[in-house]
Image 1: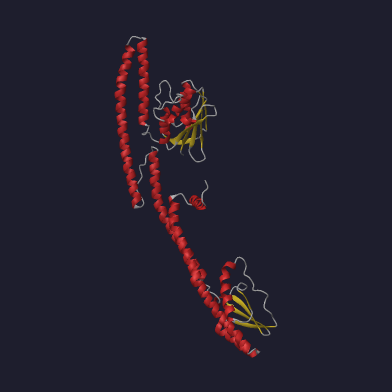
Image 2: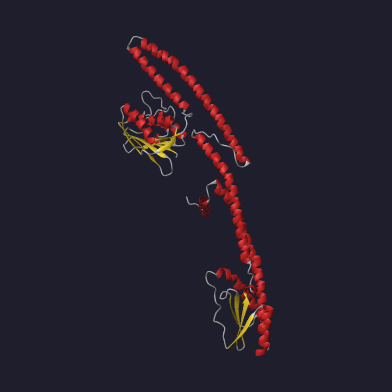
Length: 453
């Protein structure tokens, strides 16, 4: 499907626009100001500056025509001397006669760097001279900084006139441009200061929300900025309080549920311990152990480790504990991690998530490799590889569903209830990261844990 050029242009412009609120706000204010300044400058030069220049050029051309006509009426040296003196005193023109000279072959063009500026001047002066003079002429506006060189063919030679530049065009245009530039810079600076102050309040709100979302404390957050931003900040504070009350209530409820469920389980375990050993009591002990394990997983999934504080820890120390636990369970675990690699995490929660991944890998494979490294975009990446049967790509997301049980029984074991990967991903996302599954170089499953910096 081919896109029409307008859509392609629109997409290209969208990619070029700034993505931050500060950049877009600045563009909204500065762009209209800049366009207005450009429009005003253009109108000034087109409607005022060129008009004034045309009037001055016409006046200068009229004075030169008078000088030429006066000389042609009385070409004597005495009359020319009076003409030159009068032109110097009354008109500010330096008139000289060059007997036997001829006009240059062509009018001298301005340098390429000056051509855009002098082109309107040359056109205006040329139109005026063309209208007022019947004799051939030549002029140059660039040879002398303060004068315009004009030459007219007269009987017996050339009349050369040096006119001050301000007689030919308006010389104060650059001052107007300078003032417009200063005004644009001043307005832009003021806009940057005000917009930056407003955006900073939004950034503080975003940082506070992100920190709270990762489970961190935001004790010193205070609403700032415009009324709407402060309103959003107060709404965030109220939401945080409600969520915190919900977490506290849930923690209290889970503690009560855990106590109420474990009390009868403990009595049952005690009664089975005192009963006569038999195949039936052994089966009951097995069912009781499985029930206790299931209750632990249900409570862990519901609890979510949300009350733990964030700490900066060395990942190597944490991964060593995880790998040791897997080794004690009979797995062969290889560990590769930089000793100085650190991350801001909830240690107990992350340890539980990694333990779930490593034990899941150990149950379904004979060899497990655990590695961690920093990523260029910031944060860390933890890889858990095994040489087990793996999971089909189309079932990767299904493996993370709570209580999900794949046909390959990859995310379950004899005691599990399908919560191991769900708990691990919930913890990773609680840190602001995620877990992705893929194919391991060992031939089995790879679990990739990414945590923000």
